[in-house]
Image 1 (cartoon, rainbow, N blue to C red):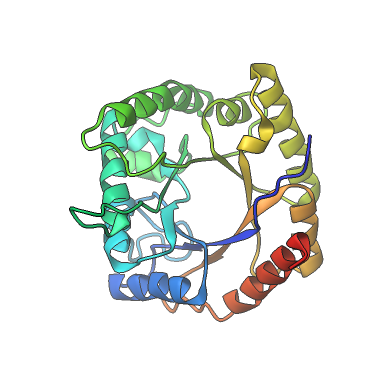
Image 2: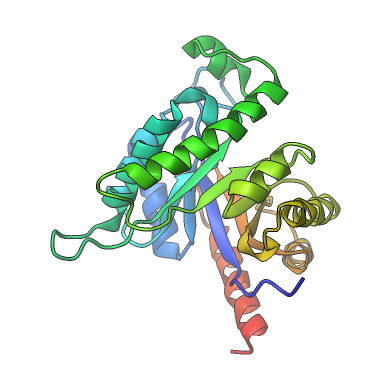
Length: 276
């Protein structure tokens, strides 16, 4: 396997909890101004941290608003819960946000900026409170496996079509089911864990690609990292194949001061890799 020549990118997950929407919108705008590559939210109905009944907003209506409020940064969910929406509807929602984010005109439609992040779902309170069947982890993964071809088919039937081939990001690290789904359907794989875990799982993903005859370099590797992680850890993740390094910031203040250091690291890393 040859080296992945993609540049290193920085993503920022803006947690849509414990803050009024103007603060969230301002955080997305700051991310773009700073030069972040991708701004993510998440797809839940209640906070994951802090006060369990605190302020919280829905994912996809927010992405449509971000599509209008930003101009250059890619946007997406880290990640959409496949269980919450009919797959054909989700495809149509993604296509619509793709067009909104293009900021085009009738004569010059432009290119969209949506990343379709998706996973099988895990937060049981969302399911219980909103009336979805929680089932089992294996059953939810089977549904994701079965729904992704439906999403792909609907994207190919919509009029107008998406402005581009919308990148599909799949989150999760299950070696028997999830990484097989990633190998077949993902443009980006988002993983978790330390350098050793990431390295092992990205190697397994390469094996899953080989099983179906897909070039593993077609899949960009993404990983979450703590804001206070040391540079050596980030360097090791890049050496292991990570190209999208994603940080998180929470409300209510959304202090993004730490992001500048990570962007400087990104720029230095890319300059060193290209010899610029």
